[in-house]
Length: 119
Image 1 (cartoon, rainbow, N blue to C red):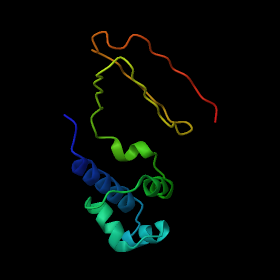
Image 2 (cartoon, one colour):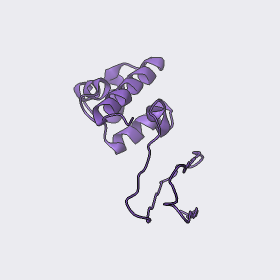
Image 3 (cartoon, rainbow, N blue to C red):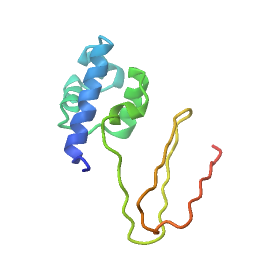
């Protein structure tokens, strides 16, 4: 079952705190590196505020983790289609492995194309 947005927000906050502590960084130090207040950092770690994508990207660089680090314990997302046209797109970071599994779709998907776009 897909987790609620609040559960995911809390998990991301917990992962931020765990990684920050493993690097012996104080909460206010990470906040300063991100250009935010310690209060805002606390809200992210508690999961009471969502972390914007651009800020999560900056945290990945500062904490030396891939973006997938924050989502490791989440279950995969299932996609249900109401028509036969589905388009999935990923903005792939350099060196990141992407795995796609399509199963038990009962004939809905008839043609799968994988293309690599140059940047």
